Amino acid sequence: MVASSHTLTVTTPSEREIVMTRTFDAPRELVFEAHSKAEHMREWWGPRGFTMPVCEMDFRPGGAYRFVQRGPDGEEYAFRGELREIVRPERIVWTFEFEGMPGNVSVDTMTLEEEDGRTTITATSVFDSVEQRDGMLESGMETGAAETYDRLAELLEKMQEASA
Amino acid sequence: MTTLQLDTTFAALSDPTRRAILARLATGEATVTELAEPFAISLPAISKHLKVLERAGLILRGRDAQRRPCRLRAAPLGDAAEWLGDYRKFWEESFDRLDAYLQVLQEEEERDGRK
Image: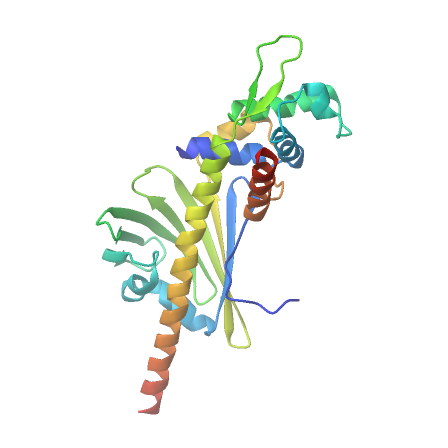
């Protein structure tokens, strides 16, 4: 096995899922802790150059969170969700919703594994919109077909080459 | 770009035959028979894949009733790639910041521990 790196990998194992993995040089307890309090989340959640004017986190099963991100251009983006399951320091299941697209809720499961003092996060987002399910039934779509971001990128590259 | 459109695009792309068809169409338009050639599957099976691609707006079919050549329509692919790219960028940057923040927390812990 290749030594784990700090690189983020993103795969889409089915049309409803996105899986991300990333390794950190810190014990699991600490990585978990960094996800469990508003004071921590506001220090890192969101892209570079964004601030978090609102950061609320009621970290308990059934609790809710809400983050408002402000971009460099002053534009604000609000996100919310609820905590479904908390197993310290192994697992968090929470929902995620962008308020700009209400009703499109994903269920995200984050697992933390520690090895030699390093922690690997695996975050699986399952998108479960009604439209999506209907679309799948309508097209008789087989699920589980491997489709990765890299494959999409590869396909796009091939297509660009072909049309060049 | 709605999530419904994205869903349809990703669903259409989840099959290797359909991805191969799109890659072939990037080289120019083709008839159903031409598209079926490289695959060990029947014409009706290819037609089914083409219907999924057409519904997803990824291909256009010609009006000519006999040939009905297929043409690539790349815009939804670009949108899908852009969406995934944004998603990736969001988490890449967040996790980089988390990495740096964890180092700060660990240094603080060490300092407090020595008191």
